[in-house]
Length: 485
Ligand SMILES: NC(=O)c1ccc[n+]([C@@H]2O[C@H](COP(=O)([O-])OP(=O)(O)OC[C@H]3O[C@@H](n4cnc5c(N)ncnc54)[C@H](OP(=O)(O)O)[C@@H]3O)[C@@H](O)[C@H]2O)c1
Image (cartoon, rainbow, N blue to C red; front, top):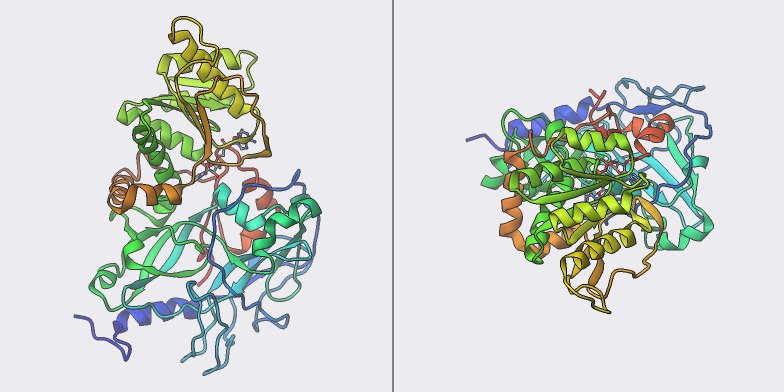
């Protein structure tokens, strides 16, 4: 058994953690501001996130921080020795459920970094890197050195809210860069609940357990690569309950496990919902997405009929290349006829719609109704008796949802979100889904990324112009420890 320090923690583990922490270097993003060429606001609403009161670096910054002028590209410089906080001083207080906490330092060392997003009541978005001290884990907790965390559409919603990113600027001639952008006045009231509260971003991710509490369950995770739906994952270190960690297979990297939860469990949740609500086949929009490709592979494996709706011909090719039988292009003049034919063939009466805005939802219900009416003999003035259900589970199009109600009277439209769904099915069923994800991590649930970037690079306007598009194949991966140490 490992020897333990005065708090009962294994000496080797703590030494390991602090060795990593001591290696951390300041991140400097160059001074200068410029406009960026994004067409407009990023609008998907985010799920909730724990908040972190930030410890913004003072303008004098950490000695040795490599600040350069004249470029907007992120640069990382090795810092020379230079304590951020003197021995025995108190570090800033953070949200009690977050990573950081009021903690008396024993040794001077630079503090780990975290990305936070604030919307001020004055109507300004501020995204910045902040210092937070990683607190010691409780008995049933572990400390993860985060090595990979995807930028999903819901993360974009939290990071940038309804800000007008076409007017975003990056500034900061000492210490860290700050991205600022105005919030259009009409959209500001919707953000009132998060006014002036720095919110840590990054719903999910993976990394190595570098410290653990005294319990057997926590100790068993030391050194393991784990994935977690831990929120605040755009942080170098994250303290989480041991029982929330999904241990990755021995040959899996953190990057391979980074997207273990949000998209895989959602795709699996669609099939579970289908079975729970008595449907026999599915349809899905924005179907060339990372999630959509997983859903196609699951439906193949489980023998479930799936109608995919995409908006470009090349996305039809992509989905066919992974085995999709029914792919309908909404940009084609024959769209509604094609969709009706696919719905008639599969008898899909349940749709999951990531687009949300415009008339797509209405068109889907109308096509379902047309397919159902064709199956029912005779005339019914109220339309078919087949119940058609559509769940909006994303907001890729933030315009209003328009329903024309030309689909009879047996229909429902609702929202669908992963967290309440997992609560609905209960812990045992959720665990069964998690186990399937781990077992099929490199096949059914494989994710691909266009680029791996550091925390500082998340604020780079050129990167934002790419990952902010939420386009097929352009998902980015954040490695909060990239280039550090
Ligand atoms: N409710 C939940 O619990 C939950 C959980 C997980 C994911 N989600 C949602 O699932 C969706 C997919 O996530 P992901 O990570 O798989 O996305 P992703 O890989 O980044 O792909 C996004 C896809 O959406 C398409 N798209 C973007 N804007 C669109 C628009 N206005 N109209 C139609 N298609 C559009 C893109 O196609 P182009 O290349 O043509 O732009 C791309 O294929 C997101 O909306 C996300 O918020 C929701």
